[in-house]
Structures are given as C-alpha cells and as structure tokens.
Length: 421
Image 1 (cartoon, rainbow, N blue to C red):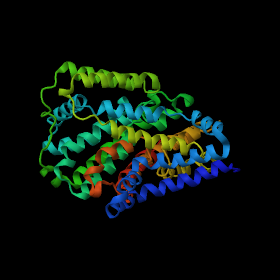
Image 2: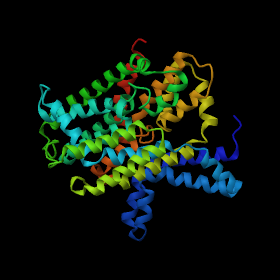
Image 3: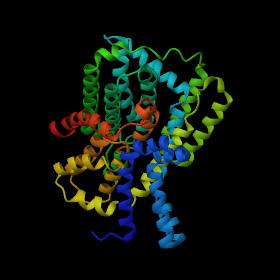
Image 4: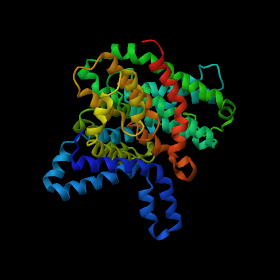
C-alpha cells in the first residue's frame, strides 16, 4: 500500500467521523449546559450531519493543497445517485396516502393471522415490509416500516428494551430483505450486472436464506416481547387516516413507482419528486407534513459518506483480497459496521478473476452486517431519522443499537454462511 497524502487524510477523517457518530449524543447534551451555543452543539450532535461535516473538512483540504481543480475534479468523480434517490424515495414513500395504503394492506393481512391483532401487525411489519424492499427498494421499505412502527408502536410507549430490540431487527431485516432481486439492495446492485446475477440467481442463492432469517428474527423478537406488544395501546391501526380518495392514493403510488423504476437515473426520479411536490401542494387536505428536512439530512449524511468513502480503497481492497472466502464473509460483516456495505462490494467488483464462492461470501457478508450501525447500510439513516425522537434524549445509542442488532445478525450468519450451499 502506497497511499497518497489526501488518502491518508481521508482515512483519518473517516475514522474521526465514525468516532463522532458514537459521541453525538454527548455533544448534543452540551447544548443544554451552554445555551448560548446550543445551535452549534445541536448541529454537531446530529448523527445525520456527521459525515457531511467531516467530508466538508476533506474538501477544504483538497482545495487548499491541490487548488480549485483538485477539489472539483474529485467531487465530479463521485456518484451521488444514491443520496439523491434516498431523498426522493423518503419524501414520496412517507406521504400520507402511500402510508395509508401500506397500513391498510398490512392490517388486512393481520386479520388473517391466528394471533392477537397487535402482535400480528408487529410481526408483519418486521417481515413483510423488509422483504417488500426487494421490489420497491430498501430505502422505501425502511421508510414505510419505520413510519408504521412509529405510528402504531413507538408512540404507544414501548419500553426501552423493546424500542432497541425492534430497531435492531428492523435494520438487519431491511439489509437482508432486499436480496430477492438484483436491483433493490445497494451492495447487490453494485455487482449484479458485472457478475451476471439475475433474479433466478438471487432467489436460489440469497432469497430463500433472506426470507428465512427475516421470519426467524421477527418471530424471536415478537415471542420475547409478546406480552408487552399485546398490551400496547392502539394509536393508529391503518384505518383512521380519514377519507383519502382512491384517485389520490393511486396517483401517489404511481409517482412512487416512477421513482423506483428510474432509481438509477437522477434526472428522471428527481423529476418524479418534483411532480409529487406539485400534487401534494394541490391537495394539502390529504397530506401530513412532508419529511423534506429529514430526507435532506439523510441525503447529506449519505453524500458525506460518498465523499469520505471514495478515498478508502487503498486499505479496504488489499484487506479484502488477502482473505479466504470464509474469512471474507466475516471480514465483510465486520467492515460493514464501519463503512457502507455497498462500498465493500463495489471494491470487489473491480477485481477480476474472483471465484463464485468468493463473490457470494463478499456480498452475503456485506448484507449480513448491514444492521449493526447507522452507517452500515444506506437506508439505516432514514430509519434513524424517523424513529430517533422516541428514544431517550432523542438519540439512538450506537452501542445499544449494535448490541440489539447482534442477535439478528447471528441469525443471518446461520442462514447465509452456516447452512449448506
């Protein structure tokens, strides 16, 4: 490894950004002690702002040391499609008509299950919606599931243990639930076309394992907290959204479909977002507050990750290639916790001559570890932003999130690594 000075600086800033995410709640607490600077501490304590802030420092370094061209050339060489897409999909998927349709569908299915309604709803949100992410994309699935859990369960006064257990399972299930198709999960998307992985390949090699792990994870957490879930007071059951005309719901679903279909073409999906904003402003009586601020903050987070992550190849790729297939599975699972899982698989796609087993292990490990931290998988910041206000001090502890996701991650390890291939 012969890293350049900018690459070394980027690696140091990347490490500092990761440390910053763990210290964010403590930094935010300083705002209460120093009210004259509360705004600054609040900004520094926003997890969604962390990587954007540190990427800004990297850009300043590039402009100062390399000049205007060095900084602009680096930014122009980054791909910001994913942050832009997450902004668009969050805003549209979280609209009142889309959530209304999703809640009605889940509530209808819950009536068919031979268990108490609240328990059935909880289980279905953690199983059906993450698996739906294979078709509507993982960020859309995360947005829908987080809002449904927020409105039906988090607002009902869940215990701290159940709050963390739920978000741990949610993050892991969304990460592994998007692998039934080759286009919905970012780490799969990075390699699918280059390695000729079609839907048939994904279902036979990844899909059934994903469905099994998602169902087991949801069943375990539902069983462990069965009594508490059963007694949670109803807040929203999907039938109390008011009289939203079917035409409005269909228009929103069509716009959501447009964003999903053109997920890799920013000019098109951003056009659908602008069309959505026009429709929403035309029918304000059928809308709640649009989550524009939350979506923009999540996009800022992911864009910062793109900027900082773009200079980590010098140490990540040699590290991965030094491993055996089994080692790369656990290495990718661990590395995903400190860097976006799509970045790992992208680096693997640059290397020619990898064995089929190595390719499988790399992607399987990347999706397995996608729930361990807020930066491990692109949709996680969206779920964090939606649910954080229902945790103590309006922050989700990185340590408790990691510990809560550890059990569901072990279940994923059994299905993706331990079961015969």
